[in-house]
Amino acid sequence: MTLHSDSILQVHGLSKSFSGVKALDDVQLNLRRGEVHALMGENGAGKSTFMKILIGLLTPDAGEILFEGNVLKNNDVNNVLKQGISMIHQEILIVPELTVAQNIFLGRESTQWFSSWLNDRDINQQAETLLQQIGLEVSPKTKMKYLSVAEMQMVEIAKAISNNAKVIIMDEPTSAISDKEVATLFTIIKDLKAKGVSVIYISHKMDEIYQIADTITVLRDGKYIGTKSAAELDRKSLITMMVGREINTLFPEKSSSKGEVVLSVKNLSQRGKFDNISFDVHAGEVVGIAGLMGAGRTEIARAIFGLDTFSSGEIVLKGHKINIKSPRDAIKNGIGYVSEDRKGVGFIPALSVKHNITLASLSNHTKWGMIQDKSESAVATRMINDLKIKASGMDQNVTHLSGGNQQKVVIGKVLLATPEIVILDEPTRGIDVGAKFEIYKLINELTTKGIAVVVISSELPEILGMSDRIVVLSKGKQTALLSKEEATQETIMKYAMQH
Image 1: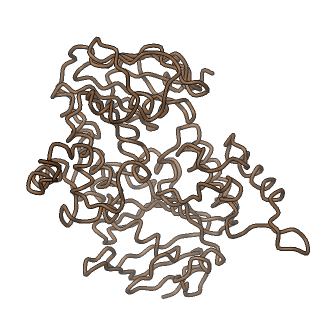
Image 2 (image 1 turned 120 degrees about the horizontal axis):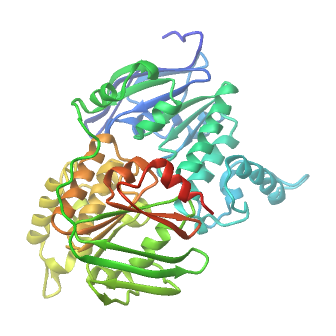
């Protein structure tokens, strides 16, 4: 295989199987210097497996990779990093007890002269510069465990930049950050391009792809479908390449009608996080919560669900004030919550699909303290079928599913507890366009059944496409409550940046 004159990385005939099932089958890629090359495909298309091979986390069964004209020996992560390939992973990889600076320079620590003592002062200074470059206002001395998911994602971006890589793989880098941080990232990517750095960019967000990508390669079911210039590939054609069929609209028609007020949040406050938040959610209604990173969106959801305490205010359910001290209290009161961090708190990695789905409603499948396997299996099978979860069976370990199917398992777990209110925090994070459409249909089905839904999302098209009303937050303050007719991307951003 010969390397094209302007290519930095070329892949040919890459294949990989797990337990006899082909995850990749004869995949190819040609990455040019200073290019942003988008890799697109549904969950399970093989994108993450492909990138893990490039970074040295997996060894291919067949195929060849050339990097700067030489065969890449990619069975060692450290070797790949030294060669000049770095990666921002979709699932955030951190050491919680170490500081931001220590995480950024993990394995590349500075030492004091004439000793092996770590030079924390030096790495703190370097980290401070990187954090300023990406616009993240946190101290490099802060332990990672105290950061939000969005802040952790920005630290991962800083780590990748710090490697001075020639190729940076970005796997869903904006899945947990807001539009303001996305704009900062895109500025960084343009600067990297100008320096000749190449970027392999994986995202399910069409708007992002068409903003920054020069070239698009599509995978489907582990197979190479095609490569085209972003300028010549329209969205409809791209979706067809990805899913093998046409999707006529990204947001399905809604047929539910608004009923009585189910949930009222009155003057809810949490010191240092949010202040004086008030809104109602009706049966059959979707209320969206929008705002930039650090606006307090997730913190409000966690307080309503009993994960965190609030300092003042009331939560009223169907006209009656309720006292929620824990998630158990919330579930008993008919409140379900899907966290933005599915890996950290959404599911138990050691358990099967079945056991994760029935986790929140296990009491419905016990008799005299014993789990009734037949009953548990029946409801798990129904939920797998209803949500179209792609798994080899209900007993498959949940970690072996794609990100989108893991998210469906988490949603299924919440729905089996038969909630009257469902709070969905970043419900389509890391999910492909086909799976997004299925989750949007599911949300509409919930509202048709009279369930009240709260959707928190960093994607403004999603907020606008799914919400009946929208609460806008800015630095913990509620700045607007907009009707569907009043809401536009410009209006939401105006109120989101008000403070």
